[in-house]
Length: 224
Ligand SMILES: C[S@@+](CC[C@H](N)C(=O)[O-])C[C@H]1O[C@@H](n2cnc3c(N)ncnc32)[C@H](O)[C@@H]1O
Image 1 (cartoon, rainbow, N blue to C red):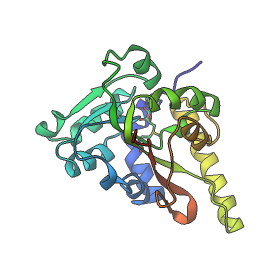
Image 2 (image 1 turned 180 degrees about the vertical axis):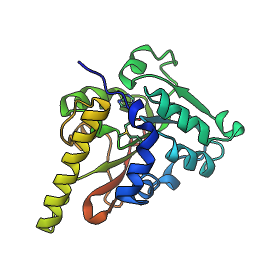
Image 3 (image 1 turned 135 degrees about the horizontal axis):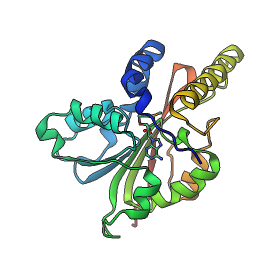
């Protein structure tokens, strides 16, 4: 199967995003920034061009990060945003998450305190998430959190639902042509997260642009 390659869009990614959504996506990414732990280690998947990483490194001065992305260009941009002392707290991994999971030499007991996926789970089909999510969830410690930002089809009003569907279809078309993305529609990421034992409390979900964008703060129940 052809693998997505975001190198070709890395240079215009921020520009296009701001032209269409202004600051709404970045606000969604940072919606639960405060809920990240102050210490420990966070796993940031498909980090992209590093705007969330920069905000997180600045907000959480003792938290360490593992940032995984197979796009050299995206990672170079992300790295370039960080100060030298901030870079010391970030381990950049140039890989697809599936390959990293296969080859990660981290001791089994070394769990992460947070997983972050902003506009990343939508790069996969339902079937792929069914396999990926539980493997990632098993890397989270009890009491850990998983922050998700995603697009959604708005439920109402009808014209906004239609517009949202159209916009999402256009974005999938764009990334298919430019990056070779195979996914064609938004997967249901909530099902595999729930099945992996994570919970989404009622107050842990925020929407923007009338329901087109959502940030979610999932929790791994504590042992006690
Ligand atoms: C739509 S972009 C989202 C980037 C960023 N998280 C954001 O909020 O804008 C998807 C990102 O995931 C990366 N990606 C795609 N497939 C991946 C995979 N299998 N494993 C890890 N990262 C992947 C891409 O290189 C790209 O940087």
